[in-house]
Length: 199
Image (cartoon, rainbow, N blue to C red; front, side, top):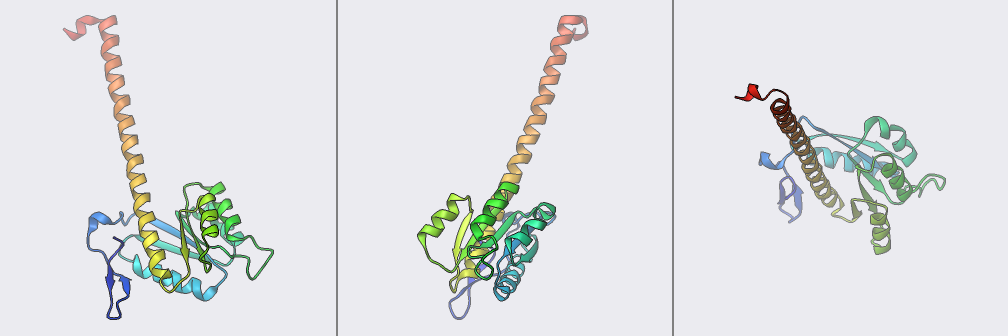
């Protein structure tokens, strides 16, 4: 479950704080999220929704950009874990890159960045195209869009946390294996060179 999904008086589900600390990430780890959408009002509203929903879940920084080109100028510097892209990024400026083109740019720069594609079109072809270009999720801009985006973010953050823990486990296991190999190697060498030391 995402952080504190509940029901208000009007029956709408909303995000609240999640007190279960086993389900949250280490607050020392900052999650950087890029929102790339040419609709300023929507972007500001989404940014606020994310910051409120995840305030006590993990340390989050949300940055907003109107074009993919502006996003990519900061991408290598900020290295966001998650990007939220509007599919129709070039609706106001036909010369600008569209969402799929920016998705490709992001994956080329860092394949580990998770990308959520947003669109007002409930179209299966767009969804399939997005996933074909390695999008992590696809959200249609309906009345429940903010809840869906926050739910998707929560899941992506949990997956990212699990990957980090796996990397740490593999690193520790590798160090332990090297240490054991060195000890065994030393014992074998002593047995061959000077076996009296082991008596």
